[in-house]
Image 1 (tube, one colour):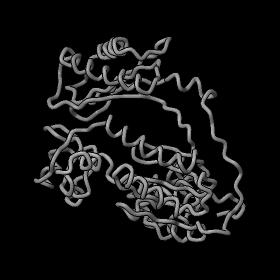
Image 2 (cartoon, rainbow, N blue to C red):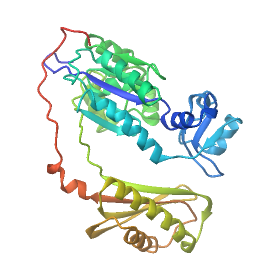
Image 3 (tube, rainbow, N blue to C red):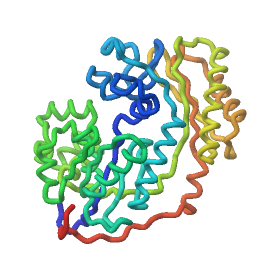
Length: 369
């Protein structure tokens, strides 16, 4: 880690089991019980699980069928994205009391750059503690946080003391922290990559650090350079407060496989309606409509059409999706349909979005991190 690089103070805040925790907060009878958000029915897939359910091995992206086998007492609750968004906005308002450099990653997590903050507090650790306390007192949910010199390390650290905890990796601790880190904990190393690294004798950050840039590029392609630098504490990505939405979508998984386009039209009508609602709520429109088709054998196909004008109206979205559906014969029966709209008008007005400019920051080791 080069000494001439600026030391920033980054916090990664991650809400604890967000969807499930919202359900438990809104319905006190669910508190302390194993619950799964989504996943009901024969073909349902779980969106989130409470910590009580996770003890049985229940997790997101798992089928409801498997989850109920692992945890017979599991309670399924419906997703409620309007409610999640409402709570998420309240949490973000807390963030903005401390800094305008807030980069949301999703409804339940965000990066904050508090190097220079509205409270004039030199300690990022104390700011994170205060933010978490306020979220609990004002919103009613718990959050965990990671604090360090860049986004990568803060993201990894936020998972250390979950739920309802935080971990700070001070500047002088960074290199040792990364060397001791299990390779599976590295953000950006998925299950497949981890297995490949294991086969090559890479089990910890120290093992990864021993490999040359040439070796990593040769064995892990474009990701090789990323691994080479992050294990040395180098990650230049700034907290970007104005992330531009690139697409907006909705999809449905069906209880029974559909084999006829006629039966799919009603489903597409509901999906197009949901997309139109989300477009209206976000005040955006787009030109490219993409139809997503997942077949019963789990193969995936997409069909797209770009219009010469921006659209957000349900009827136009639906008609375009119908055209795409009839564009070619279906390869098999269908278990999922989705519609997305991309090439949004947000991408043509980037220059109109106000940007918070970051000031150059010198190395700051004079006060607590």
